[in-house]
Length: 138
Image 1 (spheres, rainbow, N blue to C red):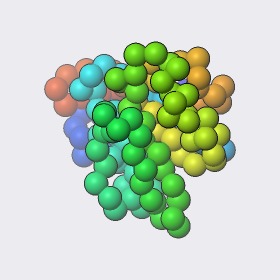
Image 2: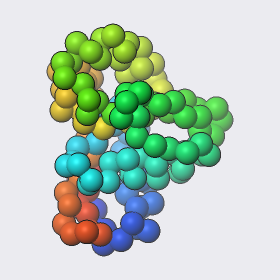
Image 3: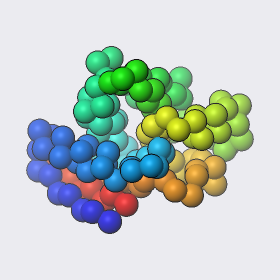
C-alpha cells in the first residue's frame, strides 16, 4: 500500500500517477471516500494523464461515462451513488465493462461491493482539511 498526503489540488498529478502505476494489469479502480472528498477530481486527473481531452464529469445520473485516451484507449467512469440495489448494475451490463480489459474508474463501489472483481485497485481518500487529503492506494 502507498500513502500520499497532499495539501493542495495542484499536487494531485502525483496521486494520479501513483494510481496508474498501481494498476499494472488490473483494470478496475475503486475510489472510496465521503461526498466531496475528491473522487471525481482525481478521476479527472487520471483521465488527463491518460490523454483524455473530453470534459470529465461525474456520471451521477447516467451512471457511466466513456472517454477516449491516448491511442484510442477506452476509459469508463462509473458513479454508483444512485444505485439502490446491486441488481441495477446487472441492467447496466457492468460485467461487460469490468471484464473488458478497459480501465474502469468506480465511484461509490460500496454500492456494488459484491460485484467488484477480486483484483481491484482500491483508493481511499480521507479529507484532512478543506484542501488537504490523504490517499491510500493498494
